[in-house]
Image 1 (cartoon, rainbow, N blue to C red):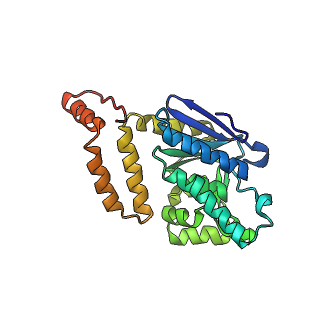
Image 2: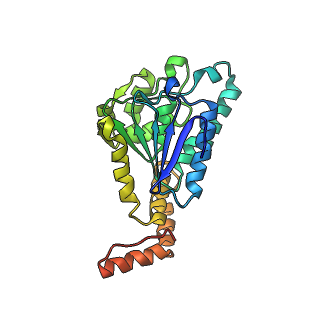
Image 3: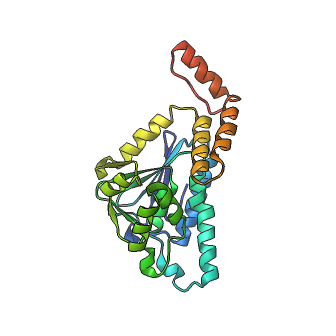
Amino acid sequence: MAYQNLISEVKEHILYLTINREKALNALNKDTLAELADVVAFANKTDEVRGVIITGAGEKAFVAGADIKEFADYNGKQGKELAKRGQEQVFDAIENATKPFIAAINGFALGGGLELAMACHMRIAADNARLGLPEVTLGLIPGYGGTQRLTQLVGKGKAIEMITTANMITAADALAFGLVNHVVPQADLISKAEEILNLVKQRAPLAVSAAIKSVIAAVNNHNGYATEIEAFGKCFETADFKEGVAAFVEKRKAIFKGK
């Protein structure tokens, strides 16, 4: 897949996605968001992809925010549409994806960059990473789901503090607050993400998707219990369930096919 602002490659069932605007600290402009929407859709519909790793080009930034110049002159209606379109096409699409997305945070994750990382199902931060939502310094608030997802991850009090002070936090603080899953040296960032996805790849793909859907339903108040019950029942109808049980009984490794 050829993009202007992304580098995208599938290797061993993992889609490696790099936001490639290093000179702009990988800021999210309209074109980059459109390309992200396209690649998320590709990942969802392609059986070859079992998981996705998103990172930023270079060693300074994962994504240092949105491209402010593009919306500096917007009115209220345009601003609302910007947030709605971005959330639906990119951020919500990642969160609701059928494959696990891991954000490999290799530097600054600010504003829309942190919102992108929070939309992913897991986050791994390099030990030099800095994270924050500085929108109030521009007279704005986070518009790509930041107020919602940060609250889900770190709780109301810490979310309000981070958003209203606009202060950046360290990777170590992000780990302590529950904002990231792991902190590793930058050189180990991608390999840690691969380690997790290589474990996920050994599991039943339809069950993995059902588990993600059920967890997301819980945090988004979409009747998570009912979603879990429905998804649990559907798992019994899959060939992978029969294979998993047979492998357990026969004391061998299961070979799942996502069917």
